Length: 113
Image (cartoon, rainbow, N blue to C red):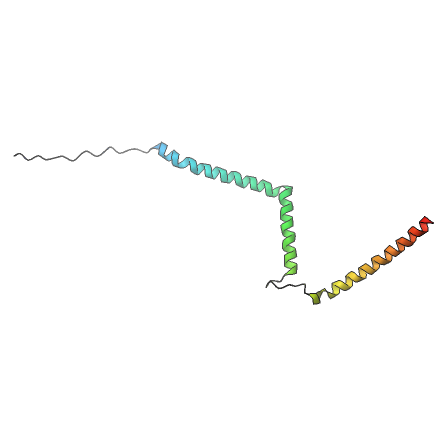
C-alpha cells in the first residue's frame, strides 16, 4: 500500500482593510456626535434667551429666599422671637398709613362740599 500524504489546505488570502465595515461603525458614531453638538447649541441659545434668563433669575430668587429662611444646618432663622422688631416696624407703618388715609378722607369730604 502506498502511503498517501495529504498536504494542508492553503490559507485564505489576507483580506485587506474593508472601508465598508469602517463606515458602518463610524457613521452612527458621527451621528451621535453631531446630535450632541446640535443639542449643546440649542441649549446654549435657549439659556441665553429672555426665557432662559427669567428661569435663571427665578432660581436665583428662590435660592436666596431659601438661604434667608434656613441656616446651614437646616434650622429656621426667622423664629417667632426674631420677628418682634419686624412686627413693630410693620405696626408703625400701618399707623402712618391710617393717618394718611384719614387725611385723604377729610380732603375728599371738603372737596365734596
